[in-house]
Length: 173
Length: 227
Image 1 (cartoon, chains in turn cyan, orange):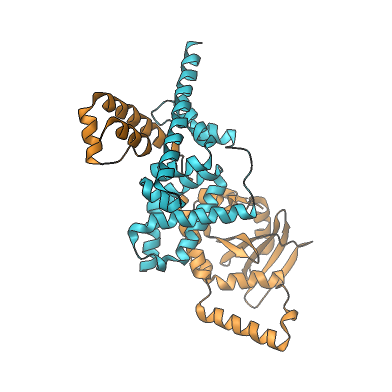
Image 2: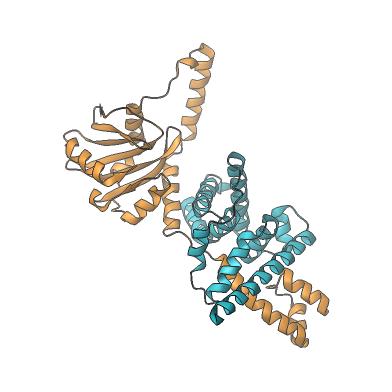
């Protein structure tokens, strides 16, 4: 296996899962998320010689993915409806140790978050980026990113608390 | 760091490792309680975001990349194509270019992927079907051993390229979306012979070595391949 191939394989193994999750929560469609990540990796493969600093690989891939998604929506604008209910039921049913109701409520709320709030939050949770780094990736000031992150968490916490109340009501009835 | 700064940081960057943030949590019980609550929330958030990744996702990305890598034209080929186009434009003959006939497209595609007739991978059927899913295609176990699978651009759209075992050697199946034939068409060149069949999403080509019994193959593929 040549060096380029090894480098590409390492990128796929290290980042494909997080890129898929990032894409999934942005487009809320499993098949489209998979397509976007696959297309992004194909573009990354063609341009892999331009990646000089391996530490920058994740940000580089995220930028490619965001462009790929923008290209896709230029051709086919996003549907107005949110996450497919069946899909949400399926992913929400997976036990994560935090209780089904809380998990469902949180995922429902994530799916309902507007992109302005969702995207920086995903970059922080999945990417581990600081507010300054997210600002650079999204072309916004760190202050604006802090506001969005704070409001995103506030919305999600409300949803999670609502989900727990619902679960308690179900248990009592 | 005071309580206000701490709580602002808590909801904008709760996983930060700033020493002054950690120090404040140790010194202020109220903020420490807020930090514990936020930490629990962050765990739930990470779990919620972590939707399952499709099975064999990495394998499919690498499979597609390996196909792309083989099919990428070399620089001199691109240069030659550019020169031919320039000559065509200069001599006014560019307009005679027409889409390649489907028969030639099929044989050219096989010629451009010579490795497809050599590789013996014995791919798992689940992996094959996952890869074919986006084409709206699937295969049944009775198709037998699948030794090669490529999701390739055929003419303008992505199609499926499978190789199975025949009596005389490898047999190529091409799932060609958007290219329609009215009836079953027999095709032949100096090395291969085959058939192109009408399919729901386009056409399906079956190509084997001379001497391969196409009737038996065709029946097997009609019974096991949905496209």
